[in-house]
Image 1: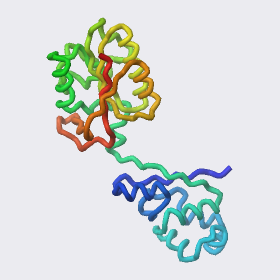
Image 2 (image 1 turned 90 degrees about the vertical axis):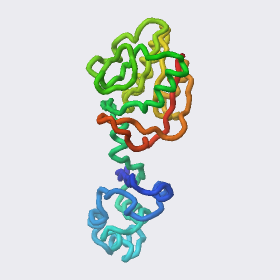
Image 3 (image 1 turned 135 degrees about the vertical axis):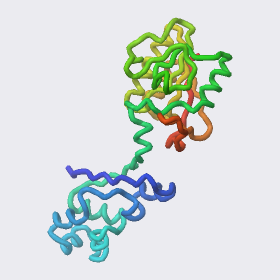
Image 4 (image 1 turned 180 degrees about the vertical axis):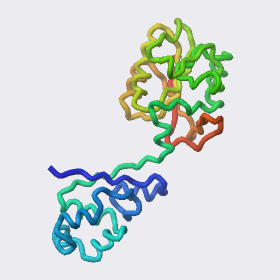
Length: 244
């Protein structure tokens, strides 16, 4: 079975360049440095001339790959000749990784989002924020808060009728938070959750099957960092899911 090489597209490219690269079109400068490098593939094939014969690439084409240039299609042919399968994937920026980190609760909700929710519910504060960064860091008005140390997944969120705001960690644990939300709503707790609008995920369908009503937010949100400053626009769309 062929071994797999992942070509990760650079996150700072224009949208049309990324789309072309995902289709295997464009220059190798569109992707992060591959492993193995073209030189390693060429050596594995027995040198430049042997690599040209095995891949059906011209000498100049292989030479451009060896010099750090060439195209994605050319690299793919060279890799396949060396018995590799090439998969092209989306490379993620550092900002994307930070906003999706399951242990990171420091990205706070933009004030206009929770203010709108309070206004529409005609209340002054939420009863609980179980994903709070702490009293000294959160501006969301709540009667009670659970921080990471409190473990909101294992504690009760209140009695029937309590109104809970949830901006969960956007990582692998998100599915666990959806399960917890559904569990709490079954005893009458009202929950409004701010989540990524990932309609193809298992947890999204679980949320809707559990009674959640989605509301897609216009534009991409600018979350608030731990320093209180507004960050760049999130690299994903957002939605509110209502269990009210």
